[in-house]
Image (cartoon, rainbow, N blue to C red; front, side):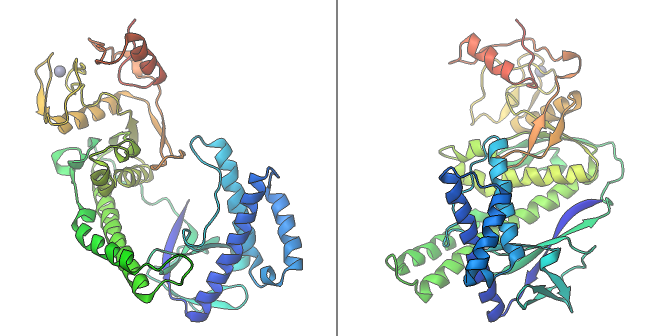
Amino acid sequence: METVRYNYRLRPGAVATRALLEEWGRCRWLWNEAVHQQRSKRKPTFCKLSRQMTDARARSVWLRAGSQVAQQQMLRTYSVALDRSFKVKGCGRPVLKRRKRCRPSLEYTVRGFSIQEGRLRLPHGVSIPVVWSRDLLSDPTSVRVFQDSLGHWYASFVVSREDTAVGPETDGAVGIDWGVATTATADAAYDLPFGGHRKRCQAELAKAQRRMARRRRPRGQKPSKGYADAKRQAARLQKKAARQNTVAASVWAAQVVAANDVIGVEDFQAKFLAKSKNMARKAADAAIGATKRELIARGRRAGRKVVLVPPAYTTMTCSECLARAKRRMELGERTFRCEFCGYTAERDRNSARLVLALARKSLATVELDRASADGVRHFLAPFEGASVVLPDLEIPPGFSRREQLSRLLRRPGSPAQVVQ
Ligand SMILES: [Zn+2]
Protein backbone atom coordinates (compact mmCIF):
# COMPACT_ATOMS: atom_id res chain seq x y z
CA MET A 1 0.00 0.00 0.00
CA GLU A 2 1.17 3.51 -0.66
CA THR A 3 -0.14 6.76 0.77
CA VAL A 4 -0.99 9.43 -1.78
CA ARG A 5 -2.88 12.68 -2.03
CA TYR A 6 -5.94 13.12 -4.20
CA ASN A 7 -6.86 16.73 -4.94
CA TYR A 8 -10.31 18.06 -5.75
CA ARG A 9 -11.62 21.49 -6.54
CA LEU A 10 -13.91 23.01 -3.92
CA ARG A 11 -16.67 25.50 -4.67
CA PRO A 12 -17.36 27.24 -1.36
CA GLY A 13 -20.09 29.88 -1.25
CA ALA A 14 -19.66 33.32 0.31
CA VAL A 15 -20.44 32.11 3.85
CA ALA A 16 -18.07 29.13 3.69
CA THR A 17 -15.31 31.25 2.13
CA ARG A 18 -15.59 33.76 4.97
CA ALA A 19 -15.51 30.96 7.55
CA LEU A 20 -12.40 29.44 5.94
CA LEU A 21 -10.57 32.76 5.82
CA GLU A 22 -11.45 33.51 9.45
CA GLU A 23 -10.19 30.07 10.45
CA TRP A 24 -6.99 30.75 8.54
CA GLY A 25 -6.61 34.03 10.47
CA ARG A 26 -6.82 32.20 13.81
CA CYS A 27 -4.42 29.46 12.74
CA ARG A 28 -1.98 32.02 11.38
CA TRP A 29 -2.06 33.85 14.70
CA LEU A 30 -1.21 30.62 16.55
CA TRP A 31 1.67 29.89 14.19
CA ASN A 32 3.08 33.40 14.57
CA GLU A 33 2.75 33.15 18.35
CA ALA A 34 4.82 29.95 18.24
CA VAL A 35 7.43 31.67 16.06
CA HIS A 36 7.66 34.51 18.60
CA GLN A 37 8.14 32.02 21.42
CA GLN A 38 10.92 30.28 19.52
CA ARG A 39 12.62 33.60 18.76
CA SER A 40 12.48 34.64 22.42
CA LYS A 41 14.09 31.32 23.39
CA ARG A 42 11.04 29.85 25.12
CA LYS A 43 11.44 26.48 23.39
CA PRO A 44 7.89 25.86 22.12
CA THR A 45 7.35 22.09 22.05
CA PHE A 46 4.11 20.68 20.67
CA CYS A 47 3.01 19.67 24.17
CA LYS A 48 3.56 23.12 25.60
CA LEU A 49 1.90 24.84 22.65
CA SER A 50 -1.18 22.60 22.85
CA ARG A 51 -1.60 23.30 26.54
CA GLN A 52 -1.28 27.03 25.92
CA MET A 53 -3.81 26.78 23.10
CA THR A 54 -6.34 25.07 25.37
CA ASP A 55 -5.91 27.84 27.95
CA ALA A 56 -6.19 30.53 25.30
CA ARG A 57 -9.35 28.96 23.89
CA ALA A 58 -10.91 28.98 27.36
CA ARG A 59 -10.24 32.71 27.64
CA SER A 60 -10.87 33.92 24.08
CA VAL A 61 -14.23 33.83 22.31
CA TRP A 62 -12.46 34.58 19.04
CA LEU A 63 -10.27 31.46 19.21
CA ARG A 64 -13.13 29.32 20.49
CA ALA A 65 -15.21 30.24 17.44
CA GLY A 66 -12.82 28.20 15.30
CA SER A 67 -12.11 24.50 14.95
CA GLN A 68 -9.86 22.98 17.58
CA VAL A 69 -8.68 20.31 15.12
CA ALA A 70 -7.47 22.84 12.54
CA GLN A 71 -5.71 24.88 15.22
CA GLN A 72 -4.03 21.89 16.77
CA GLN A 73 -2.90 20.65 13.35
CA MET A 74 -1.36 24.07 12.68
CA LEU A 75 0.72 23.72 15.87
CA ARG A 76 1.65 20.17 14.92
CA THR A 77 2.82 21.37 11.49
CA TYR A 78 4.81 24.06 13.25
CA SER A 79 6.59 21.64 15.55
CA VAL A 80 7.38 19.30 12.65
CA ALA A 81 8.84 22.27 10.75
CA LEU A 82 10.87 23.34 13.79
CA ASP A 83 12.15 19.84 14.38
CA ARG A 84 13.15 19.51 10.74
CA SER A 85 15.01 22.81 10.87
CA PHE A 86 17.35 21.34 13.48
CA LYS A 87 17.87 18.02 11.73
CA VAL A 88 17.89 18.72 8.00
CA LYS A 89 20.84 20.60 6.61
CA GLY A 90 19.88 23.77 4.75
CA CYS A 91 16.40 23.93 6.28
CA GLY A 92 15.68 27.23 8.06
CA ARG A 93 13.62 27.89 11.19
CA PRO A 94 9.89 28.45 10.59
CA VAL A 95 9.16 32.10 9.82
CA LEU A 96 6.15 34.33 10.40
CA LYS A 97 3.16 33.79 8.14
CA ARG A 98 2.24 37.22 6.83
CA ARG A 99 -1.29 37.90 5.69
CA LYS A 100 -0.32 39.21 2.28
CA ARG A 101 2.43 36.70 1.58
CA CYS A 102 0.92 33.38 2.69
CA ARG A 103 -1.99 31.62 1.11
CA PRO A 104 -4.61 29.97 3.34
CA SER A 105 -4.03 26.31 4.14
CA LEU A 106 -5.89 24.35 6.82
CA GLU A 107 -5.50 20.76 7.86
CA TYR A 108 -8.21 18.55 9.39
CA THR A 109 -7.85 15.00 10.71
CA VAL A 110 -10.74 12.51 10.71
CA ARG A 111 -11.97 14.06 13.94
CA GLY A 112 -12.49 17.36 12.16
CA PHE A 113 -14.18 16.59 8.85
CA SER A 114 -16.63 14.28 7.15
CA ILE A 115 -18.02 13.74 3.68
CA GLN A 116 -21.80 13.80 3.54
CA GLU A 117 -23.94 13.83 0.40
CA GLY A 118 -20.93 14.73 -1.69
CA ARG A 119 -20.09 17.78 0.44
CA LEU A 120 -17.10 18.34 2.65
CA ARG A 121 -18.32 19.10 6.18
CA LEU A 122 -16.04 21.02 8.51
CA PRO A 123 -16.62 22.00 12.16
CA HIS A 124 -19.06 24.78 13.11
CA GLY A 125 -21.49 23.94 10.31
CA VAL A 126 -19.23 24.76 7.36
CA SER A 127 -20.32 22.72 4.34
CA ILE A 128 -18.60 22.94 0.95
CA PRO A 129 -19.55 21.32 -2.40
CA VAL A 130 -16.69 19.24 -3.89
CA VAL A 131 -16.10 18.66 -7.60
CA TRP A 132 -15.58 14.88 -7.57
CA SER A 133 -13.37 14.64 -10.65
CA ARG A 134 -12.44 11.04 -9.72
CA ASP A 135 -13.38 8.53 -7.06
CA LEU A 136 -11.68 8.49 -3.68
CA LEU A 137 -9.90 5.13 -3.39
CA SER A 138 -10.33 4.70 0.36
CA ASP A 139 -11.64 6.60 3.36
CA PRO A 140 -9.37 9.64 3.67
CA THR A 141 -7.32 9.92 6.86
CA SER A 142 -6.92 13.68 6.64
CA VAL A 143 -7.66 16.61 4.39
CA ARG A 144 -5.85 19.85 3.66
CA VAL A 145 -8.05 22.69 2.44
CA PHE A 146 -6.10 25.38 0.62
CA GLN A 147 -6.42 28.33 -1.72
CA ASP A 148 -4.17 28.84 -4.75
CA SER A 149 -2.83 32.01 -6.38
CA LEU A 150 -6.01 32.43 -8.45
CA GLY A 151 -8.19 32.37 -5.33
CA HIS A 152 -9.52 28.87 -6.12
CA TRP A 153 -10.05 26.48 -3.23
CA TYR A 154 -8.95 22.84 -3.24
CA ALA A 155 -9.18 19.87 -0.89
CA SER A 156 -6.28 17.45 -0.78
CA PHE A 157 -7.32 14.11 0.74
CA VAL A 158 -4.79 11.58 2.05
CA VAL A 159 -5.78 8.10 0.87
CA SER A 160 -4.00 4.78 0.55
CA ARG A 161 -3.91 2.71 -2.61
CA GLU A 162 -2.47 -0.58 -3.82
CA ASP A 163 0.99 -0.62 -5.39
CA THR A 164 -0.31 -1.37 -8.84
CA ALA A 165 2.01 0.92 -10.71
CA VAL A 166 4.97 -1.49 -11.08
CA GLY A 167 5.69 -1.59 -14.78
CA PRO A 168 6.46 -4.65 -16.90
CA GLU A 169 10.13 -5.55 -17.30
CA THR A 170 11.93 -4.12 -20.29
CA ASP A 171 15.60 -4.32 -21.21
CA GLY A 172 15.91 -0.62 -21.95
CA ALA A 173 18.35 1.65 -20.17
CA VAL A 174 18.70 5.37 -20.45
CA GLY A 175 20.89 8.19 -19.15
CA ILE A 176 19.48 11.66 -18.62
CA ASP A 177 21.54 14.83 -18.96
CA TRP A 178 19.88 18.11 -17.99
CA GLY A 179 20.49 21.27 -19.90
CA VAL A 180 19.19 24.65 -20.90
CA ALA A 181 19.08 24.32 -24.70
CA THR A 182 17.33 20.94 -24.43
CA THR A 183 15.75 20.39 -21.02
CA ALA A 184 16.63 16.69 -20.91
CA THR A 185 18.87 14.81 -23.32
CA ALA A 186 18.51 11.03 -23.32
CA ASP A 187 18.22 8.83 -26.37
CA ALA A 188 16.94 10.74 -29.36
CA ALA A 189 13.56 9.08 -28.76
CA TYR A 190 13.32 10.38 -25.19
CA ASP A 191 14.65 13.92 -25.46
CA LEU A 192 12.57 16.52 -23.70
CA PRO A 193 12.81 19.72 -25.75
CA PHE A 194 12.74 23.12 -24.05
CA GLY A 195 9.06 24.12 -23.93
CA GLY A 196 9.46 27.84 -23.31
CA HIS A 197 5.98 28.03 -21.77
CA ARG A 198 6.84 30.98 -19.57
CA LYS A 199 8.67 32.76 -22.36
CA ARG A 200 5.62 32.56 -24.58
CA CYS A 201 3.47 34.54 -22.16
CA GLN A 202 6.25 36.89 -21.07
CA ALA A 203 4.97 39.93 -22.96
CA GLU A 204 1.43 39.42 -21.73
CA LEU A 205 2.63 38.91 -18.18
CA ALA A 206 4.72 42.08 -18.31
CA LYS A 207 1.63 43.95 -19.49
CA ALA A 208 -0.42 42.66 -16.56
CA GLN A 209 2.37 43.53 -14.14
CA ARG A 210 2.63 47.06 -15.54
CA ARG A 211 -1.12 47.39 -15.06
CA MET A 212 -0.67 46.26 -11.46
CA ALA A 213 2.06 48.85 -10.91
CA ARG A 214 -0.11 51.65 -12.34
CA ARG A 215 -3.07 50.76 -10.17
CA ARG A 216 -1.22 50.12 -6.96
CA ARG A 217 -2.47 52.38 -4.17
CA PRO A 218 -0.24 53.76 -1.41
CA ARG A 219 0.45 51.63 1.65
CA GLY A 220 -2.40 51.25 4.07
CA GLN A 221 -5.16 51.87 1.51
CA LYS A 222 -7.49 49.16 0.31
CA PRO A 223 -6.39 47.91 -3.14
CA SER A 224 -8.60 48.97 -6.06
CA LYS A 225 -10.71 46.61 -8.15
CA GLY A 226 -8.51 47.28 -11.18
CA TYR A 227 -5.44 46.29 -9.20
CA ALA A 228 -7.09 43.06 -8.06
CA ASP A 229 -8.08 42.32 -11.69
CA ALA A 230 -4.55 42.88 -12.98
CA LYS A 231 -3.14 40.75 -10.18
CA ARG A 232 -5.50 37.90 -11.01
CA GLN A 233 -4.59 38.18 -14.71
CA ALA A 234 -0.87 37.93 -13.90
CA ALA A 235 -1.49 34.96 -11.60
CA ARG A 236 -3.56 33.24 -14.31
CA LEU A 237 -0.77 33.57 -16.88
CA GLN A 238 1.86 32.25 -14.48
CA LYS A 239 -0.37 29.38 -13.42
CA LYS A 240 -1.01 28.39 -17.03
CA ALA A 241 2.70 28.20 -17.83
CA ALA A 242 3.38 26.24 -14.65
CA ARG A 243 0.65 23.74 -15.52
CA GLN A 244 2.01 23.32 -19.04
CA ASN A 245 5.40 22.51 -17.54
CA THR A 246 3.86 20.01 -15.12
CA VAL A 247 1.97 18.21 -17.86
CA ALA A 248 4.98 18.10 -20.19
CA ALA A 249 7.16 16.70 -17.40
CA SER A 250 4.74 14.00 -16.36
CA VAL A 251 3.99 12.85 -19.91
CA TRP A 252 7.71 12.66 -20.68
CA ALA A 253 8.59 10.93 -17.39
CA ALA A 254 5.85 8.33 -17.96
CA GLN A 255 7.29 7.51 -21.40
CA VAL A 256 10.84 7.19 -20.11
CA VAL A 257 9.82 5.01 -17.17
CA ALA A 258 7.61 2.76 -19.30
CA ALA A 259 10.44 1.88 -21.68
CA ASN A 260 13.50 1.65 -19.42
CA ASP A 261 14.55 -0.58 -16.54
CA VAL A 262 17.69 1.33 -15.65
CA ILE A 263 17.45 5.11 -15.48
CA GLY A 264 20.63 7.08 -14.83
CA VAL A 265 19.86 10.66 -13.83
CA GLU A 266 22.44 13.39 -13.67
CA ASP A 267 22.08 14.78 -10.14
CA PHE A 268 21.81 18.28 -11.43
CA GLN A 269 21.36 21.05 -8.86
CA ALA A 270 18.94 23.50 -10.39
CA LYS A 271 19.93 26.20 -7.90
CA PHE A 272 23.35 26.61 -9.48
CA LEU A 273 21.81 27.67 -12.78
CA ALA A 274 19.33 29.86 -10.91
CA LYS A 275 22.28 31.88 -9.64
CA SER A 276 23.86 32.29 -13.07
CA LYS A 277 23.75 35.63 -14.79
CA ASN A 278 22.63 34.72 -18.28
CA MET A 279 20.66 31.54 -17.89
CA ALA A 280 18.66 31.93 -14.69
CA ARG A 281 15.45 32.89 -16.45
CA LYS A 282 15.62 30.20 -19.08
CA ALA A 283 16.60 27.60 -16.48
CA ALA A 284 13.63 28.54 -14.31
CA ASP A 285 11.38 28.30 -17.36
CA ALA A 286 12.60 24.77 -18.06
CA ALA A 287 11.65 23.68 -14.49
CA ILE A 288 14.47 21.13 -14.40
CA GLY A 289 14.13 20.47 -10.66
CA ALA A 290 10.44 19.61 -10.90
CA THR A 291 10.98 17.46 -13.99
CA LYS A 292 13.76 15.55 -12.27
CA ARG A 293 11.63 14.99 -9.18
CA GLU A 294 8.75 13.71 -11.31
CA LEU A 295 11.02 11.29 -13.18
CA ILE A 296 12.55 9.91 -9.98
CA ALA A 297 9.17 9.53 -8.26
CA ARG A 298 7.68 7.70 -11.24
CA GLY A 299 10.75 5.50 -11.65
CA ARG A 300 10.64 4.45 -8.01
CA ARG A 301 6.93 3.73 -8.14
CA ALA A 302 7.39 1.53 -11.19
CA GLY A 303 10.18 -0.37 -9.43
CA ARG A 304 12.90 0.79 -11.84
CA LYS A 305 16.55 1.12 -10.89
CA VAL A 306 16.98 4.87 -10.63
CA VAL A 307 20.56 6.02 -10.13
CA LEU A 308 21.61 9.57 -9.40
CA VAL A 309 25.00 10.35 -10.89
CA PRO A 310 27.04 13.29 -9.55
CA PRO A 311 27.23 15.94 -12.26
CA ALA A 312 30.94 16.71 -11.88
CA TYR A 313 32.93 16.38 -15.13
CA THR A 314 30.06 14.85 -17.14
CA THR A 315 30.74 17.20 -20.04
CA MET A 316 34.50 16.59 -19.99
CA THR A 317 34.49 12.81 -19.85
CA CYS A 318 34.29 10.45 -22.81
CA SER A 319 31.35 8.05 -22.64
CA GLU A 320 33.20 5.46 -24.71
CA CYS A 321 36.49 5.05 -22.81
CA LEU A 322 35.73 7.14 -19.66
CA ALA A 323 38.86 9.26 -20.15
CA ARG A 324 38.59 12.83 -19.00
CA ALA A 325 39.59 15.69 -21.25
CA LYS A 326 42.38 17.94 -20.08
CA ARG A 327 40.39 21.13 -20.29
CA ARG A 328 36.85 22.25 -19.65
CA MET A 329 34.64 22.69 -22.72
CA GLU A 330 33.38 26.17 -23.46
CA LEU A 331 29.60 26.61 -23.49
CA GLY A 332 29.68 27.40 -27.21
CA GLU A 333 31.40 24.13 -28.12
CA ARG A 334 28.63 21.74 -29.00
CA THR A 335 30.64 18.73 -30.18
CA PHE A 336 32.61 16.48 -27.89
CA ARG A 337 35.72 14.84 -29.31
CA CYS A 338 37.74 12.39 -27.22
CA GLU A 339 41.51 12.92 -27.32
CA PHE A 340 42.18 9.29 -26.43
CA CYS A 341 39.87 7.14 -28.52
CA GLY A 342 38.57 9.68 -31.02
CA TYR A 343 34.92 9.18 -30.09
CA THR A 344 32.88 12.11 -31.37
CA ALA A 345 29.33 12.99 -30.40
CA GLU A 346 27.05 15.89 -29.74
CA ARG A 347 28.07 17.33 -26.38
CA ASP A 348 24.85 16.58 -24.46
CA ARG A 349 24.45 13.18 -26.12
CA ASN A 350 27.91 12.22 -24.86
CA SER A 351 26.97 13.36 -21.33
CA ALA A 352 23.75 11.34 -21.40
CA ARG A 353 25.65 8.22 -22.52
CA LEU A 354 28.22 8.80 -19.80
CA VAL A 355 25.52 9.16 -17.15
CA LEU A 356 24.12 5.80 -18.23
CA ALA A 357 27.56 4.17 -18.24
CA LEU A 358 28.23 5.44 -14.71
CA ALA A 359 24.76 4.46 -13.54
CA ARG A 360 25.35 0.90 -14.70
CA LYS A 361 28.60 0.75 -12.73
CA SER A 362 27.40 2.27 -9.50
CA LEU A 363 25.50 0.86 -6.57
CA ALA A 364 23.62 4.03 -5.88
CA THR A 365 20.27 4.38 -4.21
CA VAL A 366 17.97 7.32 -4.08
CA GLU A 367 16.63 8.86 -0.93
CA LEU A 368 14.03 11.56 -0.96
CA ASP A 369 14.95 13.81 1.91
CA ARG A 370 16.86 16.97 1.26
CA ALA A 371 16.04 20.55 2.02
CA SER A 372 16.98 21.82 -1.44
CA ALA A 373 14.56 22.70 -4.18
CA ASP A 374 14.46 19.28 -5.77
CA GLY A 375 14.06 17.35 -2.52
CA VAL A 376 16.31 14.47 -3.50
CA ARG A 377 19.39 13.12 -1.76
CA HIS A 378 21.70 10.46 -3.08
CA PHE A 379 24.03 8.06 -1.38
CA LEU A 380 26.64 6.77 -3.74
CA ALA A 381 28.64 3.75 -2.77
CA PRO A 382 32.09 3.65 -4.34
CA PHE A 383 32.11 2.19 -7.80
CA GLU A 384 32.43 -1.56 -8.09
CA GLY A 385 36.04 -2.67 -8.02
CA ALA A 386 37.18 0.94 -8.36
CA SER A 387 38.10 0.06 -11.92
CA VAL A 388 37.22 3.51 -13.14
CA VAL A 389 40.71 4.85 -12.59
CA LEU A 390 41.05 7.44 -15.26
CA PRO A 391 44.17 7.62 -17.37
CA ASP A 392 44.65 11.30 -16.69
CA LEU A 393 43.94 13.34 -13.63
CA GLU A 394 44.78 16.75 -14.90
CA ILE A 395 44.20 19.81 -12.80
CA PRO A 396 41.93 22.37 -14.40
CA PRO A 397 43.55 25.81 -14.56
CA GLY A 398 43.02 27.82 -11.40
CA PHE A 399 43.20 24.91 -8.98
CA SER A 400 46.24 23.65 -7.13
CA ARG A 401 46.72 19.92 -7.02
CA ARG A 402 45.93 19.93 -3.32
CA GLU A 403 42.62 21.71 -3.82
CA GLN A 404 41.79 19.34 -6.62
CA LEU A 405 42.46 16.27 -4.48
CA SER A 406 40.52 17.58 -1.54
CA ARG A 407 37.58 18.30 -3.85
CA LEU A 408 37.63 14.77 -5.15
CA LEU A 409 38.01 13.28 -1.69
CA ARG A 410 34.95 15.09 -0.47
CA ARG A 411 32.89 13.26 -3.10
CA PRO A 412 33.26 9.56 -2.41
CA GLY A 413 31.13 8.65 -5.41
CA SER A 414 32.55 10.99 -8.00
CA PRO A 415 33.38 9.38 -11.34
CA ALA A 416 37.10 9.64 -10.76
CA GLN A 417 38.98 7.73 -8.10
CA VAL A 418 41.99 9.52 -6.71
CA VAL A 419 45.36 8.31 -7.93
CA GLN A 420 48.22 9.44 -5.75
ZN1 LIG B 1 37.29 8.24 -25.45
